[in-house]
Image 1 (cartoon, rainbow, N blue to C red):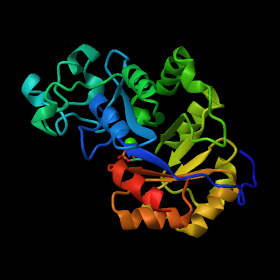
Image 2 (cartoon, rainbow, N blue to C red):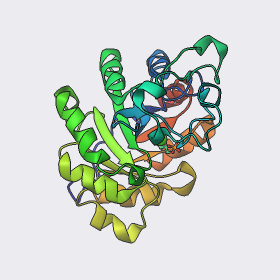
Image 3 (tube, helix red, strand yellow):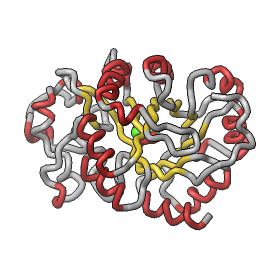
Image 4 (cartoon, rainbow, N blue to C red):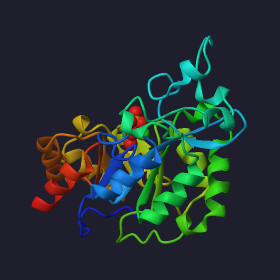
Length: 266
Ligand code: G3P
Ligand code: CA
């Protein structure tokens, strides 16, 4: 990224549906992707982890009790970590009923299924590597999968919202991913100290903190280093307006329809 984008023309704030439109449909499912489209999001954020047999899947928590019926299907285990189950085992789980009975039978999607559905829906993707330290090599596996679907690697003109960006709280993982996919924008989750921005700007394209931790001066400092700011997780209209006023480039929200209305007010 260039070192001087402080004064660049800024386009509309990007509306990112967090784990899909997760206020309205079970998070990280195909239903949540479809709901994001229906609610007017332009981009969907998902979390990626890996099954025991090496398949990349969409799932947020490190264990599966909260958002599946795993304890019913596989009773008596000490724990229910995503990475301890094969894809075939994961596929037996109901990842929808916990949210609402109408989503009974919703399955844990693979990343590949997510890519296909997002493309079909005309949605962009903000892909989070969730706890990549648990999944050594996941950056390469993700890059290899994306190369099988090269549409995702094309078409990231700087004037448009990113078709694909990859982010993580694990900044070493982001660097590894950037080294494999240097043309894909990469984001650092969490706030990066102002004094570190110049260093990370050599390979990062976004700094994506909690919305409560930033102000206009911080956003300006990130922009000055040629990077963007996407904030999470913003569900209240007043907080959305504050973030937009601070100059952020994107907002990650469980309620992309509410966010769309606020963006359209501007
Ligand atoms: O995209 C940012 C946000 O998703 C990070 O937090 O816990 O929802 O993955 P979490
Ligand atoms: Ca996430």
